Image 1 (cartoon, rainbow, N blue to C red):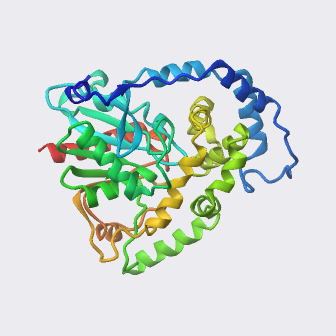
Image 2: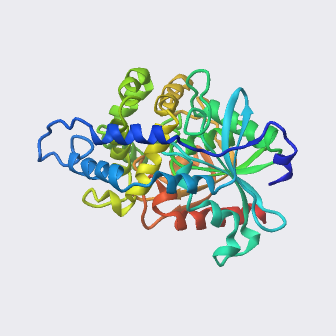
Length: 390
């Protein structure tokens, strides 16, 4: 345990345990789900494929071992602390060596801190994996406000407001003078706001998604073509986004009552946003990984409050970083995965939003980079951090 944690009485150790009766209730509801009829030729085109969901649910009832996954969650050093009025959960892994760099890694929706289970130890202890302690990080992986093991905000917070909470966690609660922030999905938006609003405490950011926009729009034919393609590709993605940004409460009544409903809502994204062919979701994510993430939403009862971030971003002004055209000036690393659902723009566009010091076009991988291609992401974070250490 680091000095900053041991010296702060408000930081308390955290372990997660789901009562047997809760697990039994979930399993019973999954087993008794009243499957409805759908055309058998729809595949995944209408949403989550019923054949696959039935297969996943059968495993959920008869094969999935939550206690094994719960033990994995509890194998990490976890804590909770009040931060700006929210009971924030975070994993804290003290890095090896004499001077590990503080690194905050941030998930998004429909994810959780479970996205980072294969990254945390190699980031913190590279010598255990054939690396050098000079590349070590002290890793802080918070559950976003309203997600998973963190408490919910008093009302919907967008990524800019969440960035303020996380900066308070890193500086006021944990006592870091400066830190590197990394994120994908909403974590990428949170990191963008950390670099924009909270420098120099947030001294650099590394993102594997670009969610922000420049107020002047595309400036070249290549950028115009990208925007048109992006808008076209998002037509079939916008349903969930619009619902959660406008009426999340209405959706939550059904979801909070149905484990299978939550599974369907989340699994669709893990399939369509990952780098897979022919809807082979398990080429990227095992059933255990999918169900662990789903169970975190169910057992913490956070489906509703996790969806609030969409409502919060709409209130904050949407994707525009700065109406005046200012950019994130802290050094920025970009890991560009080819199957990213939020298509990356040309670098010329991204350069107007960020002070990009590293731009890596990856050979494979999609939206859930930390789960799909943890080694590629790990090496890119290390490579970027070396430029900061020197």
